[in-house]
Image (cartoon, rainbow, N blue to C red; front, side, top):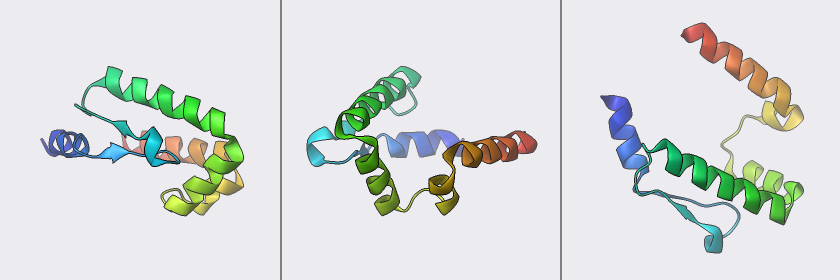
Length: 87
């Protein structure tokens, strides 16, 4: 399946949040427990360095739509609605 290949490919990359010292590595990105564990570590790091710095990094990565930074709750509500409409 294409999705499985994407997950395997993602496992070979690291996810960095804010600094090289805090890199999170995935041995097997298809493992939910590993993704949740690394997600919790990323959240703890974000809380530690402060949300303004996290926002600045997210803006710099240019991954999120500009609408996210105007109103994140509304952005994710609309995103959820679009995803559910496709299901």
